[in-house]
Image (cartoon, rainbow, N blue to C red):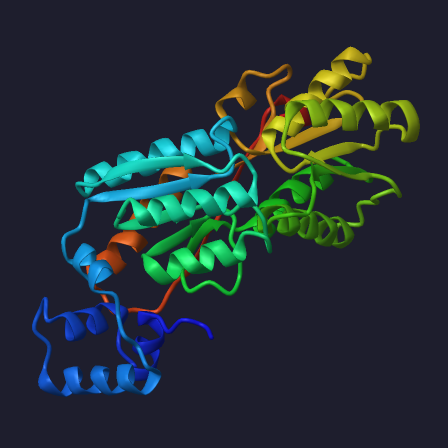
Length: 334
């Protein structure tokens, strides 16, 4: 039988989880009517509560756990730095973990963060489905905000960039540069960001009448090595289209390296775009046109959403998709 959680009681009583906690623990006053309403819901559901967890929530540690797929990826490195700064502004400390793109390790890290009594968790889940059970369990114990990537079926806030709008910017820019055919190089379709970016690429390529030849969607991993391999394969076999659209900057940097090694001129022979606008993208040869993710805004909003829950504000969970911008550089003739 599935364990009844404080969220179940809150839904039955039609109040916030914070109100349930106050009513059942007596830590803060609530009206007699609300206390009776909550107690009735708890009795009907058979909710016994957790005295230890309740005590921990009343005496917060002022620490927030953050779990990202890889701290070696410059996008996540930058995001962590911004989250740490935003937490500092509200008097909280960051407890950082890397899941190393492994759902099992991610589940272990989440259990560890809950056991260490952090006040809340900020997470970018590794996998669109394999991460779900562990994220659900953590969200049932602590306030949790998903950033960048997300899994569905979890009672939490999410903040990230609008991936469809980002690919709209990329493909419109390329079409204005005269691109009539394009390839897409990405990681395997194992998380929300990858899936949404490929869907956006296909949608806006079709809208703008940009052809995607057979075999020109290549899925591997988010790495420079995969970008080199994918581009070398296109050059050697299928031939390059007018543009290569990459799902992140690391892949795009690898594509640029493969083109240089094969004597393919960028942007003379092919245009190349990335995604994230990591610092290295401005230093590549040529500098990379890429989607700029507003990391500072994402981090600030993640901390605001988490602080809202920790501050006992009764509200529905939000999904906040920020509008991206396109940084145009020489890899598309900018």
